[in-house]
Length: 113
Length: 115
Image 1 (cartoon, rainbow over the protein chains, first blue to last red):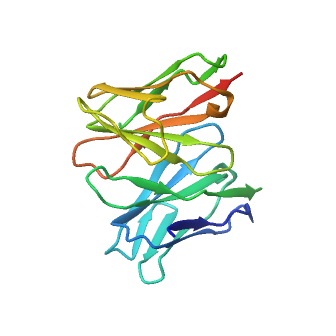
Image 2 (spheres, one colour):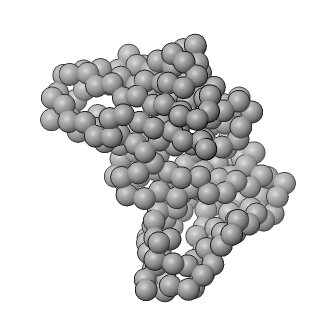
Image 3 (cartoon, chains in turn yellow, blue):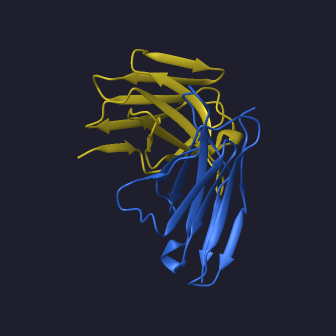
């Protein structure tokens, strides 16, 4: 069956450390993968997109890797801050004409001062 | 840029009534809009995809007669939950994408509570 798995347990880290979140998928061949941030009671906010032929993408303190052999994406936040506390969702674009997104359940990140 | 709004942000209604939720792209033309539903601590589940001027495409298991979608213009899509029941209570989120764009931009969501 097709699955997208993200750590269901919350990730607690100390301010200033690097947070690493994992997204694994099975039985999909995504054209690309996206990461979103979602705060409680709000819609997701787009962070980064990485294509299947890209290994790594960076944006300010964020870094995403995409390994299509392992079927895994890692999302890193360096020098984390309490304001980074949120739920982070990975989403696969599974093709078709409408850029259909399939979301993981998300991992909640808590950055403590 | 790429701002999507939803209205209302929160609605409480009685069982059996219909509720309309609006989704607007404020600063771009949305060729395609998507409607999602999210239950607590769960992922966003795609309900349907709509293109301006054509009928929506519903995901498997989503009743098209219950969740009516109208994408009347390039900046507005509406979702009407007909004859709402308590099990329809959820967080409804829309997103929009422009022509040839790769990224969906999401609205802030609408919390629906059916009593």
